[in-house]
Amino acid sequence: MIKNKIFRNASWIIVCRIVQSVFTLIITMLTARYLGPSNYGLISYAASVVAFVVPVMQLGLGNILVQQTVDYPEEEGKIFGTSAVMSVCSSLACIVGVVSFAAIANKGETDTIIVCGLYSILLVFQAIELIQYWFQAKYLSKFMALISLGAYVVVSAYKIFLLASGKSVYWFAVSNAIDYLLIAVGLHIAYRCLGGAKLEFSWAVAKRMFSSSRHYIVSSLMVTVFAQTDKIMLKLMIDEAATGYYSAAVSCAGITSFVFAAIIDSSRPAIFESKKKDIASFEKNVSRLYCVIIYLSLAQSLGMTLLAKPIIHILYGKAYYPAIAALQVIVWYTTFAYLGSVRNIWILAEQKQKYLWIINLSGALMNVILNACLIPYLGIVGAAIASLITQVFTNIVIGIIIRPIRRNNRLMLSGLNPKNIIELVKNLR
Image: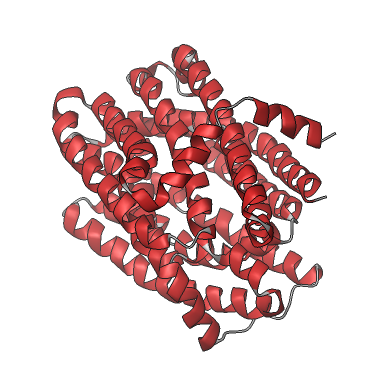
């Protein structure tokens, strides 16, 4: 029964995201060509700066809300009401931080400061959007997927209007904020219509959740460091155009990321529930999830490596050809990034969050050092190589070094067994 729920849940997300990805391909292609590598790089730079503060804004709550809902179903109204208040308050502080950073790091660059400020508005609405985890916990992701698709259609129309009327880069900077606003409003309406409990704030719940989520703040921040540092360092060490080329490669590599996100998010509640029953079924579920992610990501990486040139040509045009070599490297580091997402589920279920800061701090330091060494000599390809090495280290090598989490590496290794795929197919019949 649970397996069927997972399949249906993931199917709704995937179908809606496929439609959304079509819009994304078209809008991204038109926007990147219209803005050019420099302005497109400026938007990407602002996105990277804002991404740095998202872990602080979310206070690590996104990692524990599903588990909290499963463990304390009678307090769901307090859980999500409290998380909304906590994150909105932190989002306002983060907006001030983003503008301050841009003003200091890009002194005198008025366009950069304004774009970063406008882009950071999305933090408020992204904080409210944390209620999406209620839909995940209840296996109701189809509503979340439909609302997200509807919001994206509206934002796509907005971007087409901007392209047709020749608006400046400032207008594009607020498009993501509009997207998150529409999604947040839609999710809250759906939450009430589907019988969600009244949202309330509770100091007791806030303390309980923060005691668990605080482990994820630094660790998530470190993840962001080695996910976004490359773009920021390219902007500061080379120029906006380099960031634009690199961002184009990253966007191409992430075209199918919604498939992996749908599978992982839909599997999370079932894995937590199986943990409460017996260790054997829990580990079997984790191993099967690893199996699906490993083989899908390897197929994607191989395909994009071989088709990198036509993909860049179709989506971005000849002006972005310098992104081809970077894409052929970047797509492989996404494979290891997805493995890290599965590992984090295992870590939370096993209550080993205290090791996350070690894992991610090590990765962040390695990424910064490698970028500083490789970018001056290899440019955007150097940044891609730095990220690939970092992902391999943090998601595989360090799991061997830290003894208490070695069990996860064994489950990951068992996920290579293709028999898991055969069993999954049989169970879905």
